[in-house]
Length: 401
Ligand SMILES: Cc1ncc(COP(=O)(O)O)c(C=O)c1O
Image (cartoon, rainbow, N blue to C red; front, side):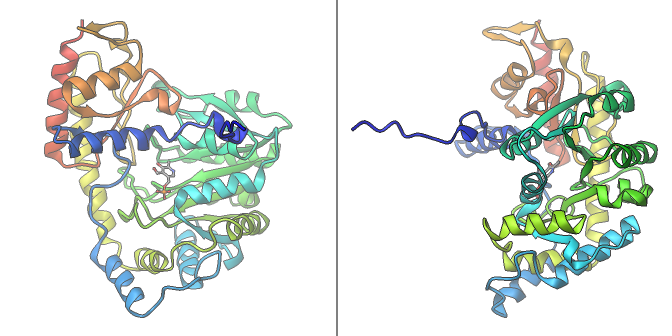
């Protein structure tokens, strides 16, 4: 009997994360000896600070290597509660926090916990690559809300309001943003919070870059500006970006108790607790000295200033100045329609391919974030690499006619 290797409907159209794919391609080419400048990485280039690693070593030596409570150890949840109180002046209980295997699993569980088939989730564009796929995997429907570089990718409230229906279950926001680096103003956060309460939907706030801000402000959230929205806000965060801990895989959700309970239940039937040793390390990260964060943010800011200035000097590129995260998202659409040899630049995908082939510079096409006019460069790499990457970029772009 022939066997057609059947797969579930839900994975047939599922694409692998494009950002991880570009990064993997760049790393593979580098491993083969190609002289690649990788400006595609979604992770800090810094090492995890020493005191965090030490906490993990102690955990191993002390035999802290068994199952923990599914939602995470109490001391880590308490450190998260303390951070949220510090940053947002909002009190959460232990049963309103669940620790997961990276921020990504927290978000995944969140959508699984709140969406029924047909529920709609409003996603501002440009968006982080995984939101639409996560919504769809939970049976939901992504509804896209276009934002524009001219308004620093702010949310147009009238446009948002027009997209809200009786099927709207949530709006997801990410400030500072991957890919744009934009930060929503307090007025925007407050307006969003008020609309969520008035119209009855959740705001999922992906705060993973909350500490990486260059405007001198600390983390902000709809609950910190409008506490009445507490029951509508689900906070997703983690230690990956702030503490250069991407490989440790610790993230968390905080929000209304029923949502957290549901997410914990899902986790109990899928992955159980996140890694016990990494939980101890995350505890050290959140409750220990924070100078390492300041140091990294200072370095990112210096690189941001450098890359934005250089990019805007390249004819045909328009680049906003991001207020956070470690990405720039310049408009490169003026190069579309141009060509060089066999390369015809139809959109961001072809441009990213051309840059990888010609300039040996890896970046992520804007289409992966829902907007083809742009391209994303990460500056989570050394200034020397950024400078060399930009020199090559300028030369390759000048070769298009
Ligand atoms: C916007 C955004 N949210 C969430 C995540 C997930 O982070 P983690 O590595 O903790 O799963 C990332 C990582 O790239 C991200 O950029």
